Amino acid sequence: MIDAPAGAGIPEGLLVRLEEVARRVKVPTGGEVVIEDSSGRVGVVSHGQLAVAVLGHAGRMHTIAFLEEGDALVLPGDAWPEATGAVMRAATDSVVLVVVQEMTEVLAADPELGEWIVHALARAVADRERSTAIALEPRVERRLLFNLRPLGEHWGRVTPEGVRPDLRVTQ
Image 1: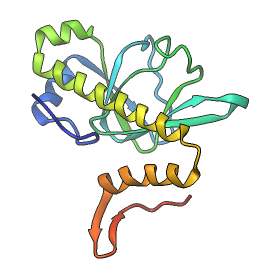
Image 2: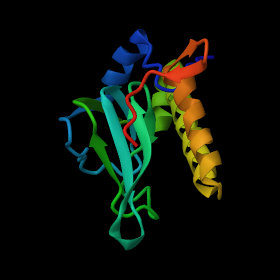
Image 3: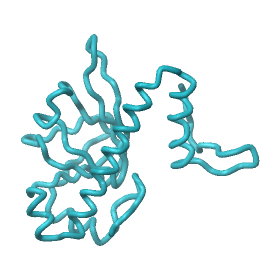
């Protein structure tokens, strides 16, 4: 079984095989991922960082996820009927690998690659569920703590004072 934490990247051997069943989409910093006929397709970030945002009430965009190398998602479009106006915007120069084959074909042809993609999608679902749970927490202090913990786990370093995220946070 293949198991890797979110953002851990794509194992080298699998990256080559993923590129064989996917189309590369390059997105410059600040650009939006525009993929014709992408609805329901799986995308995997092979390079860079992306923000996923949806159109909320009063026309405001709400960022629901940050994606980096090795993160996967089902691409916006008809597959996201409740998320009209969903966009993926590049925070850095990025490359998204869009799987062009049906997942059943990928699983049949390359079970190891299919398993990795399914696990990457499961991590994405777990991340969105965590984000939803945090958003539903009524107390601001607890929402802040719930958001800081994964930052510390992912980018933190242990110091005598505790875990310190190695990030420049502005807000």
